[in-house]
Length: 220
Picture 1 (cartoon, rainbow, N blue to C red):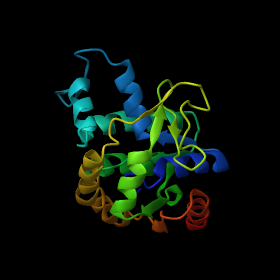
Picture 2 (cartoon, rainbow, N blue to C red):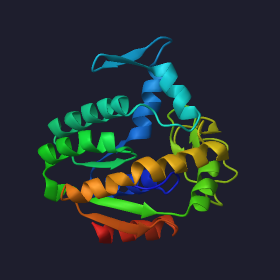
Picture 3 (tube, helix red, strand yellow):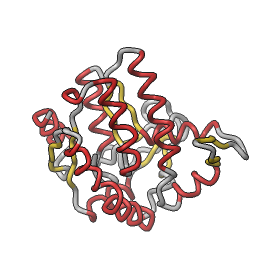
């Protein structure tokens, strides 16, 4: 857990590699569903239709997508991974109390409360804005490229060679909107986790990627 640009995805990738886990990245699930969707496509949940084009507009404007749709996609993936016998590291979900109340019971049922570790990455708003405005992804496979002195002038993805582009939600105004959403809608989930018997550890996200990773390993 953490605000936009706090390195959730990067740290999850490192944990996945270190502990042989599957990295369940909500943004990846969203991006892939957007990429394969056609005009007029929708997902029907509880009798309501969620049109993919409308959800994409919400995301690009900095507003959050409909929690029932996100929850639907994430829960399906969690069940699939558990059936395959895989452990999971999740970044980017749950973002809302609705998602937390829907996803947490499933995780507890499939994996057990004692096996669920929650890490909250702390970071000041101004750091989030700077990091988010600099981040890029590749055009082909949507690989996230960490912004460093070494990658600042990089124009093509080192993994697949496609062009590097800015994410649709990397505009400072969009980032500020997402930070507001995080404060109002995500942070309350932390108290919910604690009431569910889950231990929450806080780490300083303003350190180097390597130092944050060391702190996370110590925390879990």
